[in-house]
Length: 191
Length: 126
Image 1 (cartoon, helix red, strand yellow):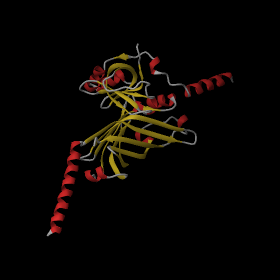
Image 2: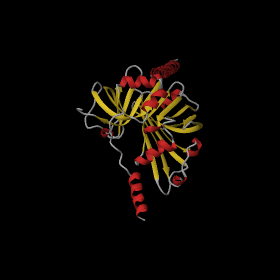
Image 3: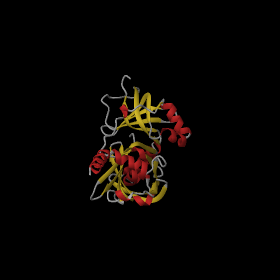
Image 4: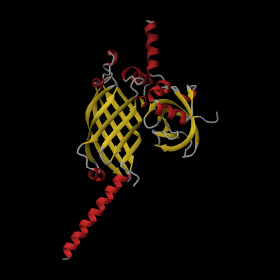
């Protein structure tokens, strides 16, 4: 008799906790970070080049797991001013194509698993649009919780030629065919 | 031989040239945060044609402070349609808080949720 009352209470408590979490999810369904960091790294025996953008924008819908990232190409900074000029004027043509975007969704998204996970890995499937070209990608992401901060990081590779980016023959040995992209966003959940 | 040498030196200097400070360059536009935000939210394509890559000077009220050393931005109130995000390469000497009035010069990178200015500098008493 006592046992079944206890198990009912336990179930009720679990239900209550879950309900509260679902409500919490609802309250802050759309998380935004305006100052995410996105960098790309090209490494060749001749030279290493890195471009870093610290004003990347990401919106994450915690109800559906949909993800939207956008950044301004002119926001990428390089150590060498001339490289930055070449990047904007010749390679990425940022006057013509000012933004790069990623629109996608976390695979097999489960709101509770996502919000309660720590050091958990997920996959985002989506479209990257850059330099006028759209490509479907699968991007691995890692989720870390630090207090009220939801930190999402990722590292993956992109092939420059896939986006119709032409590297002049003189520079071919200085720029890698594949670049390593590093992403870091910090969403404040305000808990 | 001399020509090749000179060419080499100029080439090397170009390749390693210093980034010119935005504070030293005359602005292409002096505009209020509201006006530039409205320009972009009304017609992004034309606003890009007008402002992209240009040096913009804005004065306004700080509505948010983001980041720290190496990643510092001041968001200026631009009305209902967004803000102007002013990104600094190095954190300014003075501490800024929400409500402070500032005058900033920076290079326009475009528009996401807000108009974004890069390589920003604070203009004091000018």
